[in-house]
Image (cartoon, rainbow, N blue to C red; front, side, top):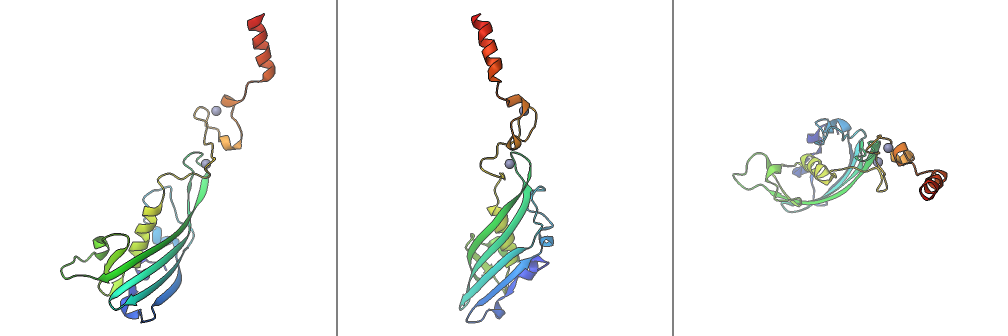
Length: 178
Ligand SMILES: [Zn+2]
Ligand SMILES: [Zn+2]
């Protein structure tokens, strides 16, 4: 899958027993970006979908699995964010007079429209974008960077936060009391 249109499914190919497919979307499909220049897809995303039909009504269950390459917002280190999404949506025939862009007419995550093809690609990309966090954190225990010297505190304390040498502390006390 090198183009988002490749994910469209012609409803005529969905038989009474439904249609099931396993495929990979190449990273080039996401070239236009995920809305953040620090967020990239560099490996293929695995897609599995199963579409069943009840006359004109189509029901799609789509599983998306892969990873995003980005940076931790606290320590700025490169990190991988896993993508693991299950989408469940119905498609019903477009009503007369609906505009060309049927994906824009989608009522919610769970109800879309079609004429001859189900536009799974646009739906999948928009759902991936919606699922992404605003901030990425490499680990919930990430200590981030020291705001004073910029050292990555996950790798050890920096000079600003180095604990006071106990010997020095005793000297200070002696001075105060002496
Ligand atoms: Zn981090
Ligand atoms: Zn510091």
